Length: 137
Image (tube, rainbow, N blue to C red):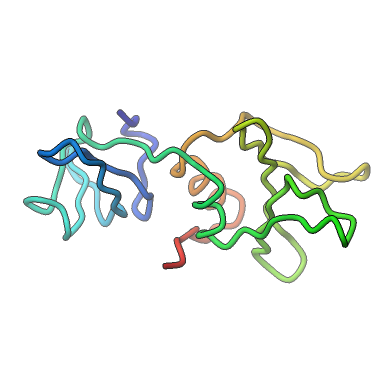
């Protein structure tokens, strides 16, 4: 289950259908204990049935992150997404852990807690950039 306070419009989350298959969807609305999406059964689900999506490298790539290239002196475990002309968001993936990184005088340094779920990455990106992090299909 996901915390109500963690869900925002635009978050990528999931639910289990009647066949217990996980189905992902994007939150289109939130109101009075329900999460809305036009593709859901009855177009809504109660918070208790909404689950976080576990972050993986494939999803990072679908969000537009690019893996570091050792040929250019970059760490191949660091994925970066440029959000404006000068700045990028960096995530290190090592030992199944996704750790946010920030630019510092000595290079990229870890900050905050590790990210486990997609909505956490989306919320962090929104907090840092004020832009939405959306999937490329």
